[in-house]
Image (cartoon, rainbow, N blue to C red; front, side):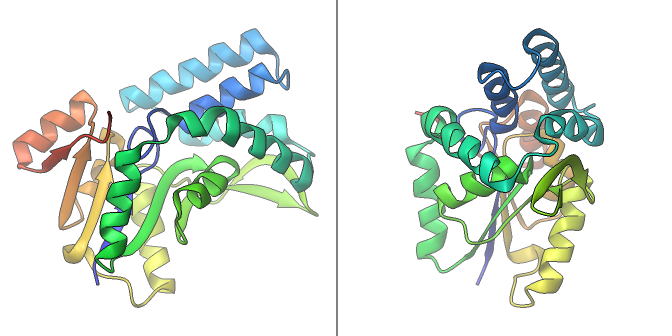
Length: 220
């Protein structure tokens, strides 16, 4: 049984759910619109350039949730899914996931996106197993701070290793597929036996060509 790992943003989705969540908070009047929007865009530019301080970004994007109950955030999650995620869904992404499911492969979603966004999106895409950047909770309320190592860049390698220690039936790297659009995922892409660049950014596209990796598109 092989292991098929999928990145989320701009891979299985036609857009970036993390950045869209920031825009959603602005649209709902939950943050100072002008300042938050500018910072959100600046962090996204850093991500695209490969220079994102993920800890600082998580501190920024989770701060508006400070003190909110799980129930109140679930209401926001439902709105976000309906208004923002549904338009990003890709038929070819569902087909790719189903291809591995029919083959009997183990499926794992891995994303740097924080769990407030990642959890409902993983459920919508049909994943039983998923890993994202964790958020702090105390007594059923959000602390507004991240928790543990972000699931980002080399952190994905560490998170996968920890996940495998809990799932001893998981395949090793040689029999593992990883689908991603981003050069930020090169640490994990370089570890697996079947790296696949999906609608890759320019840096990943160039690296994939040099390495002879498979390149595919899930966009219409």
